Amino acid sequence: MTPDLSTPSKHTLYEDVFAILIGTTLVGLGIVLYSKVLLTTGSTAGLALLLHYSTGIGFGLLFFLINLPFYLLAALRMGVAFTVKTIVSVGLVSACTWLTPQWLDISSVEPVYAALVGGGLIGLGILSLFRHKASVGGINILALFLQENFGIRAGYFQLAVDVAIMVAAVFILPFDRVLLSLLGALVLNLIVALNHKPGRYVGFS
Image 1: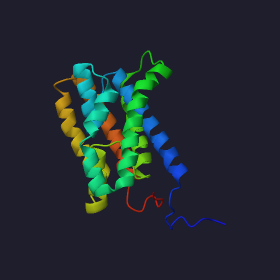
Image 2: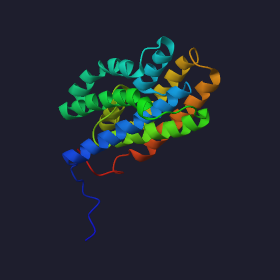
Image 3: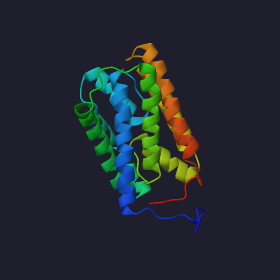
Image 4: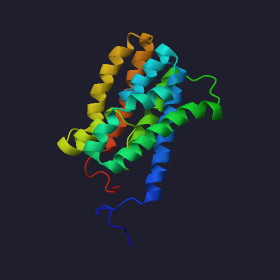
């Protein structure tokens, strides 16, 4: 019998766990590719990368600390389950970016490849998390809140925030890396904007 795909179905716990593990791994790997060639991205991850390049402090620690203030908005507006999943997701991304270089030795990577594939990995990871009512914190929380309450596309909102972060990157990174970072941000946000639409995916957590 063909299943009725028009009827929403609730995700099971193991489906949520699997999606969060896959999503955070993809995001973490994308960020590792970015950090290899001095690229940045949007949201709190982009801010953490810029601070990492400027100070030498580990990305994972910065990423976790920057996201702390956004958990209050998540708890007040998005619910306890979303907040818990997001805290776990942020922690897993922080851990992935620290552990991946110990598991995977990337001696060199072409910057254009890192921008395209890294942006794609991060976008797919965020999409996986969004569809299971989780995020990687920061602007992702605000983007989901705006989409669910005001109909503002999460991807397009994030793109606007990303542009502001790229302006800041001009003062920290070589200009060619800023341009490649913009390319990666475009890929990332197009994946989210084109795939995370009301009615496009009927499962829920």
